[in-house]
Length: 450
Ligand code: ZN
Image (cartoon, rainbow, N blue to C red; front, side):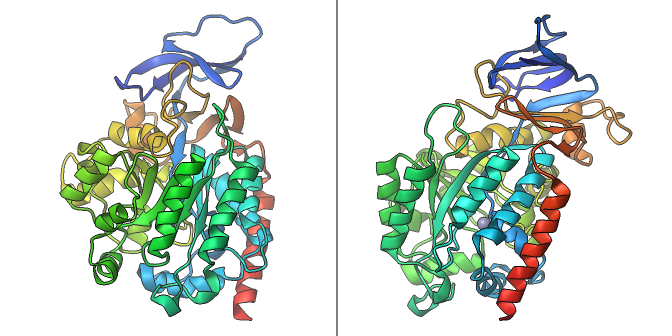
């Protein structure tokens, strides 16, 4: 049993309950008490003096491409389509060694920025059959995060009217077989699961309609979730109108992808009518404001999506389009992006903390288990130090977390296990991970140079 005592607590429960001074108690991976004032005395408990800290639910990252950590800052002045065309041939050279190193570095960065659950959208698979998905899963086990990797896919190459070169796409049959075997090998549907697989055809411009339809049917038969990129850029909107005679959301509906088991990356170019359609279906959106800014894609209409009851979570997106890769930084970015698009108040600090926690949990179908600090939920907790020189003057600790620089992380727990203590990752040697990443990036660049 671990007792976090004397901290401010922001629970993100349905009533948005906060305690200026309170406690959180965890035992056997589950939250057993949350409340105001000092914790009761428990014999044999490990007591953490958490005064000067803010306890929040661990942050949930709903969109990522971990392998992209090996190709940061390439094509930095291009928009999505030309950026992708530059990177596809480089990504064609990935191996499990490269992906494992990239994933370890990327997941370490996430843990050090308050993330307790991350997804990953992996959609480039080497022809050698090298197990790159397995490499991300082993990295997540090493770092200790709760992990929702997706078996992504592309089957629409350039010669058939798609964007990616034919060298990086697979056949429909081999994709469906790979999803089946990934689920059989890795998926754990049990309560408190640390690993769940989803299926994730990549985007309208890299995937056939047949694969979208077949993936939806397969996922529903297997009982797993569905993820894809949608409405990210105006180029994509144009592609859908030209190829299908539909908007991206109409296309999604036409391939049976509207449902509470689906979450979409980006959702930048969505109308109010689109938001209503997604809200009625319970289909979620992973909002990736830094990546959208880096690629000049636009700003997602998050207040309208929330107004339509669309589950909205935060995503850092792949580090090739968001070199920072930290999740806590996205809190401030989300508030600022909403205000740049919609004016005031746009979103508040409490709104964005809810998006980053419960919103993400809803996108991943885990709202009953994670995303808030409530008795019975899994013990995924971030403890932010807000009494230091750059935060202590701010009266409301949630404002300190969102508006100031991301605070030091005093503790990060996943299933009650401390992954981070005073900004030090306890599970993986970060310096060694950085060296491995540098080596992986060089190997990949050399392969691309031929
Ligand atoms: Zn993405």
